[in-house]
Image 1 (cartoon, rainbow, N blue to C red):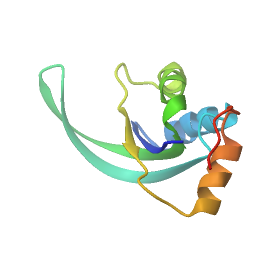
Image 2 (image 1 turned 45 degrees about the horizontal axis):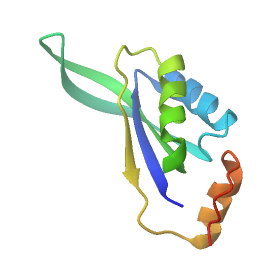
Image 3 (image 1 turned 135 degrees about the vertical axis):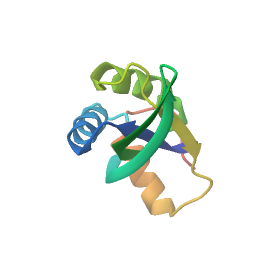
Length: 111
């Protein structure tokens, strides 16, 4: 079983909370963490933007990433939200078992 961190940027803490709740309630992630007050610098529609955003980091499984991304896009305000996955290379086996238990059921055996 492959586990992932999913990194999402949101316009503010309230949106990050809304997106995180939607994904965790759907059992597409076991946990969501919010880091508020990030400064973002990026290009949008040909103009350089400097904005405050909130970071949303979720712990999930690779096999749920497509469905998780669709849920984020459904509830997110951005036209093109940042939703990227980073592999979890290793971790506390008890934590990874918990992550597996708290996400959508599957026939795949963690052992």
